[in-house]
Image 1: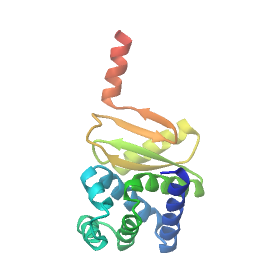
Image 2: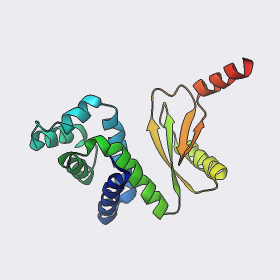
Image 3: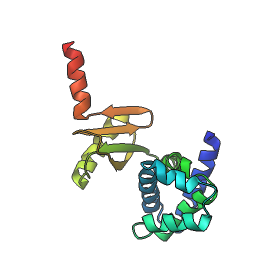
Image 4: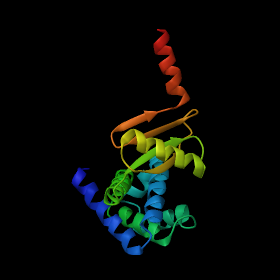
Length: 176
């Protein structure tokens, strides 16, 4: 999909979340739902399948996220399903977060960890990334079971890999 379409949908979603008055929470919900949906090719295929009636797709979305997400989030996901953009949901939600961060004068750091990070850890990480990048940083933590110890953070085009796996690879290269 072309970047301008992703940008257009991201801006539209951002406008809706801002109009609802809880843009941060709704953006976070959309990001988490997009991450979860992105992990299932079967789900994406089902929601993008033109032979499945839209009402059935709405039922699937409602069953999956209806009790865990706000009605606004469910409606926005259904809108993306309805316009056949569910396969672009991850890119749209990431762009939406970037636009929101840009408007507020900071950047988004997507942090991957094997477990939830407590508030103190998140605050220290935000401060360290802000120091390294020279920009105010907003964290979005993604639970990723493939990260073996440590953290992996992406801020704009820069990847900070502090995972145990990466450290072991660096050790191996140093000994070679």
